[in-house]
Image (cartoon, rainbow, N blue to C red; front, side, top):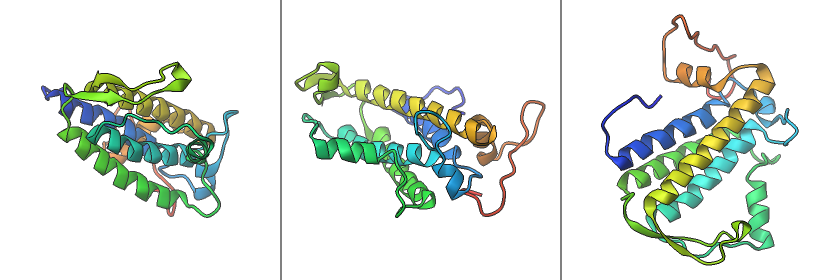
Length: 197
């Protein structure tokens, strides 16, 4: 949890973004590779696929946080790469995807911390929303959008995880954070050899 504090805006955004990323990552805690690939909901989402997609999103966000990106590729190859981001392929492991996620997370949080939320930037076109040209924004517009996206995927990961074994992600986050047992929480005990165990 991002505890109440009097941080500057960029630091606050770093903490809120990281809170959502921690939840996405924690969804894999204690799962087997097979469970992390499972798609128990009608959407076809898996915990591993959500983590892979989020890592892909973080890598793309780095460029947008550091510089102005005024073009958006919307061709078939770009869409295929986007769709592939939700699938853990046979030649991939969720363990390796988590390593990529962790590297991307550290890089993104460093970039957000160094950013100026009030600074001028450009948003690329979003033709799927009827926006066909780049538009001026303050960088906070994009940073809050990142927070929105990561929060959405943290919710997806929580739902998928609960469908797998009934464990809620907040308990997994607290366990990974080293929280002690109390009247409201009992630490999760993963099976040896499972992800992040």
